[in-house]
Image (cartoon, rainbow, N blue to C red; front, side):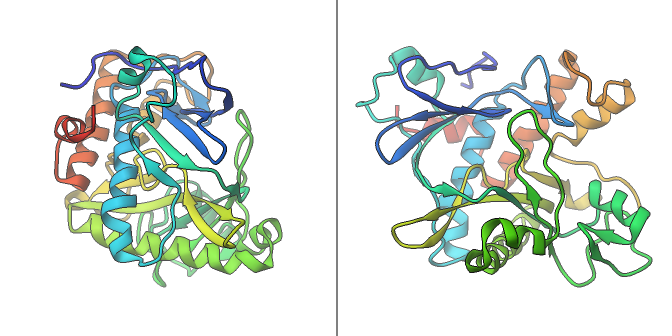
Length: 314
């Protein structure tokens, strides 16, 4: 059965901590590898909530694994990603208690040089893109057709709308593809854009067949400096990095129900807590958010979280 403990901090002391983000803690695992441990912390409006969401870190990790190992390689031959294993090598002396606590919520990944942008792909106009469009008729500075409705699909297909990658505590800034090109360099800009669009289109088709619309998502990429190849890194197509909508309920012209943390954002806004520090979710909001994450997991993978955890090596 799933663990009942909510893991809001990993806090390994036996491995060097490389970085800590809103949700993940990254540790040295070897000369060329890292241990990515995903907590149950949750953030909204760039603020981390005081309490976490049951099983969230496990959902994010195992959904990422599903995309990287079971779905995308068949859709995009030659796609290179950073995931090595979900199993922590016995050579890493983290102790049996930590090993059990991290089961299903950690990945061993290869190290790469990270491109300092968020490669966002939007298939539908919503969120900050809808706000910008209403004011200026643009999305990330890109002119859009007149008369678009909230949450409708972009008429010309998905668009690449990158952002800066802010340090922890900072806020990502929406930028144009041309501005992203200056950051990553002419040599890699088109490759990153085309790969992000290809992955999104493949994921959108796969998820649509399973009752989920991937409205938008953000990818991160690294560079294998030995082979000069672009590598897909970090979490991939999760409820944290994407907007997932129930396909059966989709209706443009209004806000959509979602499988992601939009439920939490809406609660914060309704309570006058948007962007405020020191906020704790109610037990009901925790439970509802956890249920949405688990529902998305089961729809996308075809198995429950318990079933997926049971398959993992002990």
